[in-house]
Image 1 (cartoon, helix red, strand yellow):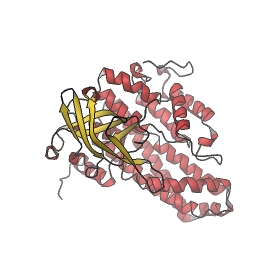
Image 2: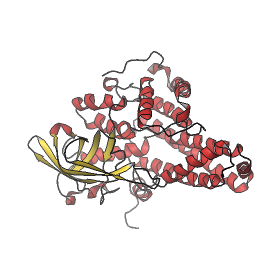
Image 3: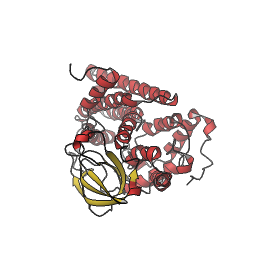
Image 4: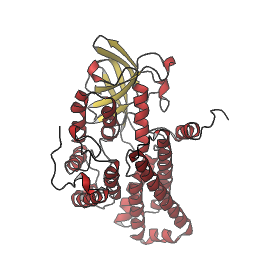
Length: 400
């Protein structure tokens, strides 16, 4: 499937700067006001509204930047991808409701999937026809996937799957699960891991929502009881699951949501604008303590921008990021968590008589603070990232 070329989309030869200008103009012209988190007219968009918005971004050439044209993408480079991400981050738009598909399942299918799988899955991910969830974490295997227990047994041309996953984001809405299983025993550790693309309406799959600290049910436990899938659902060779999983995690930690630094900068602008709009909050901007804390945030955002841009340059030069993806994940998660703590301390001064912008900021940053508590846990905890950096980058011994 080829995406129909919108004549307004710049050619590949135009360069990243031209593509960024195009993205800036299109996004600012088309993002609905009620979907801007820094607007007083904001309301939580529905799943259908988010789907339609992301589909329109794809039609405008602002998604699938680096995916092959034969599979619905634009066939551009990471530089154009980063250029668009800078403009996505600069606006307070909703997070993707299909990030697992676009950022994890899609790249894995491109790497280890068959041509039939690529044609089946990739265009529907980009056009927002299918949602995915990620079935990696288990009650006894979170960041340490070597302890994974969900079992897949081959029976002729099918596989029978039994086990349990937990903290599965978006499982209730997902059409497919990127499922990591084991064909041997736990003693095999990294050997014998196998990945599948499993339809979520397959008999034997049960989704149990988990209510999080904000009262939402974004996560779930997923149970697989004698779930039968055809061999055509297998992604990669029977012993390729570990390498594929590591590839997923290195991609997730180094390149996913490249817009984060620019989104943090957008949030900082929102916080300062809210303070300036309110007589009581504006006094905080003259306080030396808050000035120093805001200065720290500005410096950390600039450092994160540099780290992301360096990563893109290295990947464009053919370097494999590998363990260095942990540096990016560690830095952005710790940086944003500290920033949200600062923002919460500021908006705690908001009262019923505060300005409308201040009221909006209080809601946004209170929710942001709660979400940020998980940022040093998902995609590998801070402790795991430090361990990876120590052993694989600094070559320190396991036991000091």
